[in-house]
Image (cartoon, rainbow over all chains, first blue to last red; front, side, top):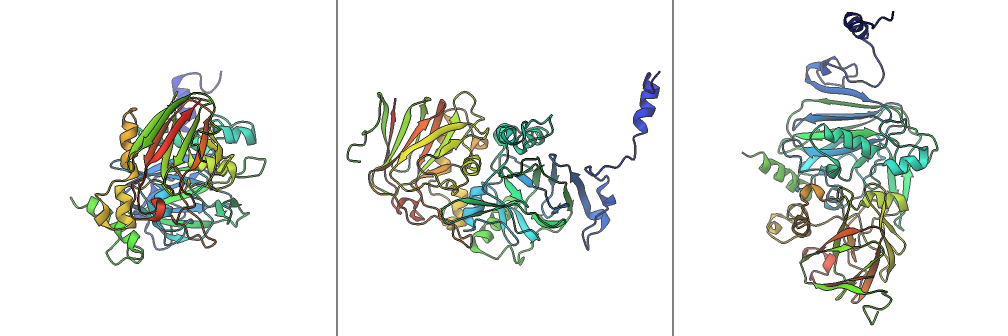
Length: 274
Length: 209
């Protein structure tokens, strides 16, 4: 007889798993976070999760929240979608994010813009400097071509299909997977338009701190970058954490840094003037 | 190209003049060629595509750029869907390159780029929403588009912007459909930057084959 032959035995077997720790898992409650950012009180924490290689996670966060991403082992690729939590029909617009800021590269001081002329996120700190707004998510075909398979149920999940599962849990679907940002794995545009990956190797522990300028749903997939040239499916865990913070004040240096950015903040402030 | 129809094979199934500032849409069958003619020069033609069989599959600028390793669309560029399938191929163009990073102008982004005095001006997103609504699609179906005849360079320091065009009257681009698709066009009404030479003009859309 096995130790799961009747419901009581099966219950005991299941409960015996309690307390198991693995690398890729959420910390609950978030105030128990083992990796508190400097100066952040434990009770301010609202999220700490380590996203597995090939994994995904999503979270609703309030306006003012800080969101920190850490490339724990130096080989994460944080592909990100962003939605207005109240009205997810408003979402990240990569083209507007670049065009409005007259610049091809995201980094400290840059803003992440919605398709409704608003600032969704500000980049407060960036220890990486290698990000990508051009190449987007891997998909079933790109992963199958490189790794043999790309399915959610296999060993080489692709970022697009990870997004699809994450969005389904918010009532969103394939049509809502908009062009994404890739944090940590970078790309440069050359004079002839060609794209040169900047994929490392990188030191462990590079971080990025964002500030939510609206109530948001943030969605992450941690899969190899679509231009990753290595034959093996290579990606390491991604740490995401978030804590409550003050809404951006009128004299915030990022808010007033550029005329375009200031108008993006004014549009957010108009949205919340109710 | 003295004859706008030269080089096209098969019957001409559509031959439309799209007025300045207007939307346009058409079904393009696999194997047909869609020719877009910049009649008066430097007129941005904002362009999206959806698979006719499953319109959750649509043009993906990011997949297209990643696969070709380049941000510019030129002769030979294969335009990929968000599922990684070829939707169309640029079989010829008399312009050196076209844009797919600049996106579409909108009333809302115009307020950031130029000021809130531009909020009531017509914009490409308005055209896209109207043309897509005919097919039952809405705002969630909006993704990064192609801007035929628009020039968006990226400088070594990352500076990026819509600058003076490199097209001219009568220049064209030919697309061969690799699947049955719906083409959605906004003949760009923008008047605040050089994408239309500050003067929106008509374009010609020809489907052959």
